[in-house]
Image 1 (cartoon, helix red, strand yellow):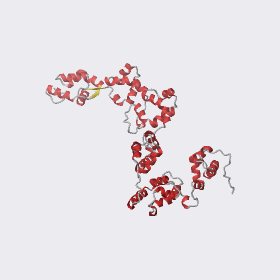
Image 2 (tube, rainbow, N blue to C red; image 1 turned 180 degrees about the vertical axis):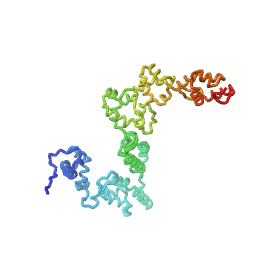
Image 3 (cartoon, one colour; image 1 turned 60 degrees about the horizontal axis):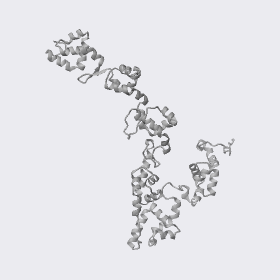
Length: 443
């Protein structure tokens, strides 16, 4: 059997994604791509982001490569024992919670805080006994072991060895973070956004929330998890799965602001707008359909309440400039019903084009054309009323039979009988009372 050399040549040009390579070639391609970065990670104290920038690779790709093929280097960087069985499946730096490195560092001191043998010492004294910083140990206890502090203080009070020092949030801190706390609880803003709006330190606000308001952090985390599960139904202005409000970037908003204003306030087409503002047609159209569907619906002549998710597939597309062209004729037709040909001629429109526009965008108005409303409220064809009007008036004002009236006016008797029964039954009743007969056709 002939063996095939599947090694990667140093001169090989890699695709944008190594995942596009055959599975048998991916590892060697990744090793070659990240070799310089891995060497720098092993021999320097530079962060992954700094190394990735110098080596012109992505930070996420380098981090994944280290985690998959060079875990001992990660353990060495974080001061862990790579031979420990837990380290084989351990995530060295989890996104949330206490890292394994911190757990190893503070484990003995935290156990001492729960030990009766150290009950006479405060947290700072215990920290110094284990060569740690008192504030750092206190932060670990507040963030990951809050019950240890509460139980310890209660027991020290019972034993009479309490130092009567201030515990819990200080009044000045509560006052300083009150506005930020309400904003963070009631909005979808992130901690940096809230801190900037309220003029407080982001790190300080983070610590204040982690120490004294874990319930709010958990509520926000649950809202993010729910938003992440609803990826297919994300809406602008609502929370996304990454904790940010789903919406366009500020620079994108600024870029398309003049074009959007013209789209809202004028009848210019998108082509005319992009020619005026200098933005791309595809970019502006995509911006509208992704972030301003409501404006698209309004421009098409439909109402939108600003809350429901608009569905552009259920609305008819038409040009606002065309709507403005026919607006005056349509208003005149609504105010004074008459034939479409007459209105089109009056306003200089093509009758057939105008009629098709009405059928497509004003179906209710188009359906009533050629019709008229009788005094009794019934809708009948104007041509039929013109045909039977004189005979009906004669039938109303005389005692002559309808058959004779029909012959006099040259109308088929059965057709006028059906027309009166269907549309003017009150005329028939009035004639009966006047002539003293009970049915049409008899004197």
